[in-house]
Image (cartoon, rainbow, N blue to C red; front, side, top):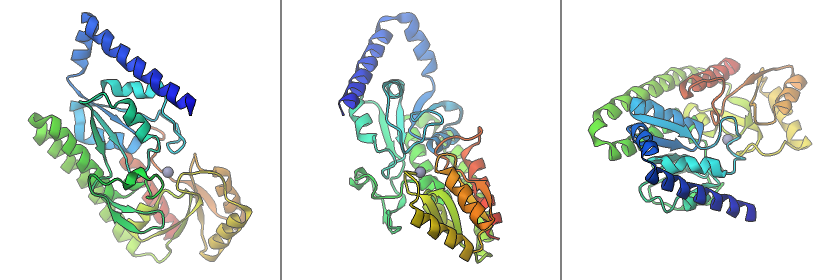
Length: 315
Ligand SMILES: [Zn+2]
């Protein structure tokens, strides 16, 4: 705990000294002004960066708070990460309990009154951890009770549209002049989400196999969209490994449902996927939770691969 407080204080001091530097140094100030012709967006996690880039286009500069390759559920903010927020115009976070460190970061930047904070989950039809639905309205407090909702809303092509809408509204809010530009990019982007959804809705509707095994319990929203059922090796936050009993049940489920492919994720007990696959003579294939950017792929590319692989495994 004391280390956390120290980290926050360090961040605050660094932010304060950055501001001081900018004010006192004309040369540096000019550089800052030049760069700041673009709207500076800091996104908490990878999918939000993609949405912001798609909608903001060349009017925005987007960076990500959770560093490249860091497991999003385990992340703890570092001073150098929070520093990124010192120069930000918009901070967009996932919400729905994804960022367990959110309050800590917001407290650190509380003195930055002009920072626009966007909860991308506002208006999203949330799943709670028991798989029940709940509509998230603006101003509700329960997303601060971490762990109450499944946070992986971006893995729904339908809810990704709502997240994108929230980002678009924020951009228009501070840059009215380019309203038409943002609207056009947004329509373009959600058109692609709709197309992908339509294509796979049709395909999944034709098959009777519904079960697939995943690395961590990230695909609840994807399952809701396409009427599928995930059985995960690790939990919502990719923590730990299954007990021998849980492992036995997964193997049993794989046998019962004639599962030919066991999915794996880089960050969620990949060895266990291999063990199950070996037991039942199945193949192992990767799925993307999209929490981190993998092999330079965009959100849409990873979503399409996810859907294609799940469909091929089930058909
Ligand atoms: Zn996750």
